[in-house]
Length: 109
Ligand code: SF4
Ligand code: SF4
Image 1 (cartoon, rainbow, N blue to C red):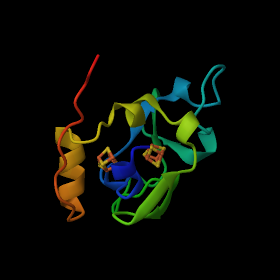
Image 2 (image 1 turned 90 degrees about the vertical axis):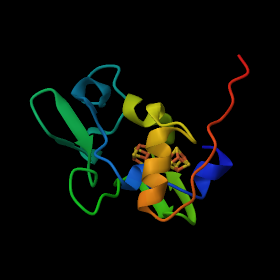
Image 3 (image 1 turned 30 degrees about the vertical axis):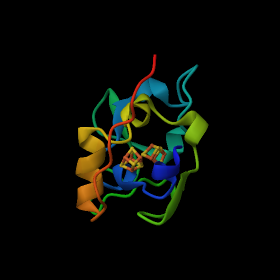
Image 4 (image 1 turned 45 degrees about the vertical axis):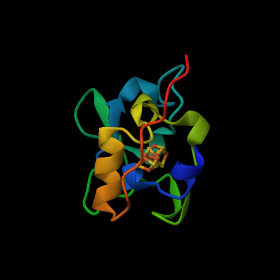
């Protein structure tokens, strides 16, 4: 996690975090602990705690906007990987928690 993310966590406490069930460890090759997910249809699951309001992923440790961590960071879903510091959804999530917008990270590739 970036230093900004370590003092944020807003995206883990704003949106439903859903993904194909095959990303769970109930499927060979899957990584996300299945017992931390809940089915939302025959093909997709969501991280528990993100399918209800107020949203807070069950894997999120700490206090949003202060200090946070992900208890399954190396096993997190593709949806979690898609969040990028400073992009539109990041700043939408931050605004929901009263946090200031960030600049998008500059790619040097
Ligand atoms: S909302 Fe943005 S800054 Fe906050 S944890 Fe998510 S990606 Fe990082
Ligand atoms: S699994 Fe980790 S990175 Fe993904 S939403 Fe939950 S706390 Fe955030």
